[in-house]
Length: 126
Image (cartoon, rainbow, N blue to C red; front, side, top):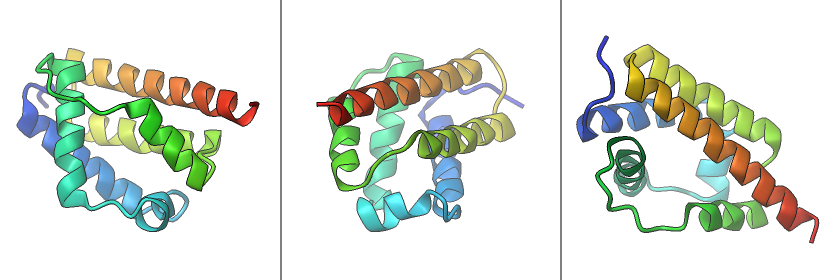
């Protein structure tokens, strides 16, 4: 199994990841009912984000934190949802890739989930 090396690899990863999310009723409603994402538009944005984070390509200009805080205003993004998200993400990585970038992307995902939960808790306590 190869490591994550390019945007094609990242596209495979995020596509596999979203298949998992959307088939899990414990979390899929966030994407189908609350946010109503359009995958054909969303996946390229995610590839750009992860490409910048893992491969250093740049190009991601959105405010990741604010996006999640906005979603949280519509539907509480609980720690349990973040655990489900992380489990599906790690599984998608582990089933498709192995290596330094694979470990790096999982570490980054954990960091992002942790930061988002802290920001959400801060918003909730205001």
